[in-house]
Image (cartoon, rainbow, N blue to C red; front, side, top):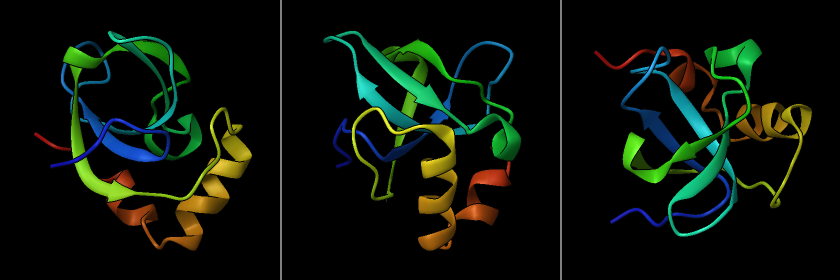
Length: 90
């Protein structure tokens, strides 16, 4: 089972970004996390999201808590996950 942690790739389940993949940047509290696409890659902008509105995947990229979008993009490329994050889940 996937663990809620910074660097975990997840899929948005609700809202205008439904089906797009994003990366958890920080854990705000027991109900909310900060996620980003980054926007240039997946179309998901950096925002607070309820954990009930995301589905965790088994993929984790190596980033530090609170990393900026540039660092996250580099980590995604290093982990060879660019194409996976671009694909939409229907």
